[in-house]
Length: 488
Image (cartoon, rainbow, N blue to C red; front, side):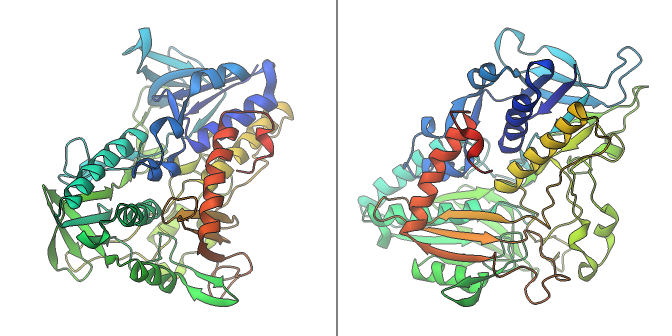
């Protein structure tokens, strides 16, 4: 009997666990370790954050779903990995600390034959002084609970505006090295849409602040896409929407401090500025989960397994990161997501260490990096989770010595439906596809991507598609009938 341990139950971890247990059956063990009791369809947190959905609409309990198909679920946080075992434990193991129930606080070692690191990001609010809803002055939509709080604060603001007050709203990224600009993009337009529906849009100044070099970068180096038979840059596509909705923008910005009602930021040209606000949602930078790693003798080998940000090394070309941007190549990116030192370990989604960023690296004259870090969420995460599950299945059932499936972001397309306002008749969304995610200028010298697979439109139909996908992916994640026919 083989034992697979999966750390994390987000999109990538849950996808890997669901498929693996289905394929491996009762003769093999699948263990999922997550500190969270609930699964959250994070894209719809945007709608929770404006009161368009409730928390219950975007989460469900994991334990009953896993019990249904025989997955061993441990609500715990992974602390460390011993990929060689130890002097006392022969097999590789992961050390976890339980976060709920009668075992809360208990530390346990869980042995494994294969390990999938799908821990996702640590929301690193601490990287910017005063950032975040817990110990800072901004709201967040990164978790369902955060989104509920954001909605309440927005409602309070709207009531004040209905009483005649004018307000300043600031939405965007809260650090010079943030990813997930798409979430900020969606939230700023959903807030703007709600203000119009509430009849107070004329009393709000809405501003978007971002570490992107220009609007439409989204951490993927921007894009050119087909629209109405014409090739349009992502910059023009985005700027036209911001202009149409009356949303101001500040780009090339590193937010380094937040006080009550005020943001301090540095621009790429080295100048420093302040921006007042009455309501602000700023996405934090991401970090790895903070796990340690030890060899058989108990020596710390964390730096051999994880990069300084806490993300696990896989089969990427990490030497490429020291090369000039012009020498970066699409083939630098990992294909199998397998750790090259310990071949029974894999990392998927945000948990893997990218070889470098995708957009061109930038620094201010003060030496401050101001550029988006690579997005590795959503559809790509799910595809990685499934590919790794397929490889481990073949290793266990067919005796394969090497991974049999790949999910390379430089050979992978992605579809994104970005909400620009929720409403069955008044909603809009930008529906975009991109192929490949990592630009490949050797294969596509003009734009780095295949324009036959990279296109976009915005309108009411896009909102209907996003609304349908909300229910489709929740159905799939709950492993309801025919869940496997819904694509990742």
